[in-house]
Image (tube, rainbow, N blue to C red; front, side, top):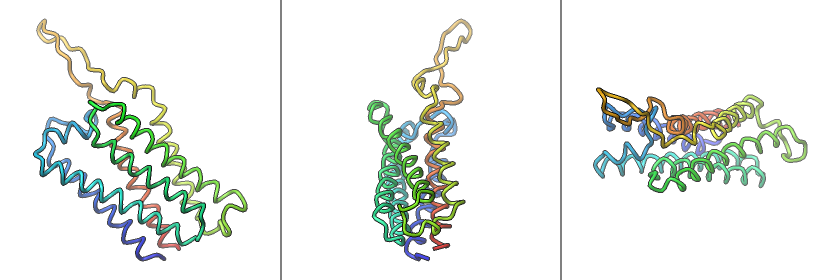
Length: 216
């Protein structure tokens, strides 16, 4: 068992939990995570609260990546060290997408989709390491439930990436109110909700790595 990896991964979950608790506490009551992006919430907050949330996201991303790298370093495998670098990119891009405003929507979308793709590819490479002979010296050290759990997360992310409703992230609902036409946000914005769920799924990935580090 790698105590240091366990500490980093556990801290990452603490940072993520504190982030969500503060986010829900700070945000306006009429703002819902189901139809609002991170930058929409941050823009209504004073600078000190905004910086605190940014800092917690940075801590979550950095401690997660470090913990995953330390867990894989146990295997002494350049292949898994490469995979851990892809996880680093995935966590970093997803965290960045959370704070990039849609005034820079191309960068926001590129960051989110790239981050999700890196996590999915990383999970697939771990699957190959488990079931393709010769990639790892001892692939029995990778528990099957751990590998299958990561593939399940990857499958969810791929569904998100292929969701055709995401292309309508900017659309508002047309509402007639006493003869007056208004435009309102839909109760659910698929892309916004998927981004929040993805951030939560990264915390779940960390939980899988905590179990793996305990086994090792």
